[in-house]
Image (cartoon, rainbow, N blue to C red; front, side, top):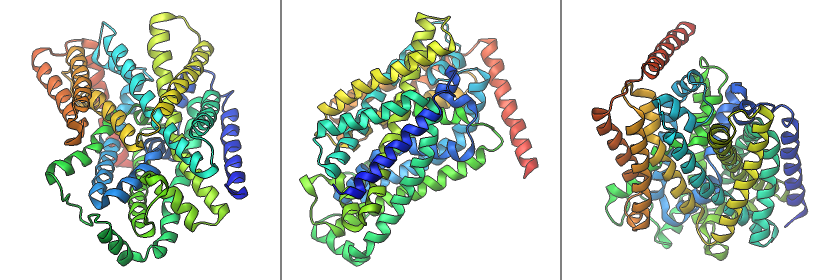
Length: 496
C-alpha cells in the first residue's frame, strides 16, 4: 500500500457517497428509485448499461482467462460483443416501448402483463429466479473486491469483502437508480481509460509481439484461436454462447426501460457498441501482455494479472486511479444487481402480495431495506466462496439469467401468439436444465447456458402450437407496440 493509492481510493469513495447523497431526495417515488423516472439520457443510459454488464470479471477474470489459456479464450469476448450488438438492436427499442405500454418497471411484472398471466406465477417464479441468481452474481463481485483490497492494501480477505460491500450499500441505499446510473457513467469512463492506458504502457516492457509469442511458446500456451484440445467446434460454441446471456440480464434490460426517448436509441446503441468493443479488446490484450510480462503471479492466481500489471508499470498516483477503475467495474455491476433484486422484493412481492395500498415513500423505504438484506446474504456467500474463481461464479449466474429469461424476452417482444403457460413452462424448463447440466458436470464440455436456452426456446415454441394467446387486451397491446415501432422507424428515417 502506498500513500498515493490510499488517497486516490478515499477520494473515489467520497465521490460515490456524494453522488448517493445528491440523489437521495430526488428518489421520491418507486419509479424514480428503481427506474430513474424513465428520463435517462444517451451517455448515461449507454455507459450505465455496459458498465453494469462488464463487472470485475472484465478487468480481472477475462484477462486471467487469456493469461492462462491464450487466445482460445478470446472467443468469450467475441460472443459477448455479438450479444451486445444484437441486444441493443433487437431488444432495446421494443422493450422500452412495451414496458411503457404495459406500465411496468420490473421484468417479472412485464412478463405477467405481457403474457396476460391471471395466476401471478410468472411474476413470482421469475422474481425468485432473480433473487437467487443475483445474490450469486453479487457475491462474485464481492469476491473480486476482496481480491482487490487484499492485494492493494494487505487487508484480510474478510475485511476487504465487508469494506467493499459497505460502500456499495451506502450509495445504492441512498440514491437508487439515479445514483447507480450516474456513478456508472463515471465508472464506465474510468474503466475504458484503464483498459487502454495500462496495456499501452506495458506493451513494450513485455517485449512487444515477439516477446509475447516467445513467452507463450515457453509456457506452452496456444497462440491460435482454434482450441488444441477436445472438440474445437464445441469449445468455440461454448465460449461464444456467453452472448446468449444478454437477452435475459435484468440489470441490463432495465437500462433500456429507463431511456428518455425512443427516437435517440440509435445514438445510445452506437455509444454502447464502441465502448464494449474497446473494453473487450483491452481486456484480451492485457491478458496477452501479462503472459510476456510475468513468469508467475502472486499466489498463482491468474485473475490478479491486471492488478500486478498496474503496480508494475504505473506511477503510484496513476496506479491508484487505475486500481479505482477496477473497483469501478466491480461496483458498477453489484449496485445494479442489488437494485434489481430489491425491485423484485418490493414491486413483485411486497406491493403485489402483502400491501397493495403501499404509498410511494413506503415502497422506496422497503426497496432500501431490500438492498441491505440482499447485500448481507451476498457478503456471506462471498466469504464462503473465497477459493472460487470470479469467472466461474459469474458464468453460473450469467447462464442462469440467459437460460431462464432470454427466450421469454424474445418471445415477448416478437411473438404475438405466445401465452403465459408456455412462457412459464419454458422459463422453468430452461432453469432446471441449466442447473442439472451444471451439477452433473456436463458444464466442462459445454457451457450450461446452451442447453438451458435451447430447452426454454423449444418448450415455448411447442407450447405456442398447443396453447395460443387469446386475451384481446394482450393482442391489442402487441399490435399497438408494433404500430408504434413502425411510426418511430418512419419518423427516424424522415429526420435522417
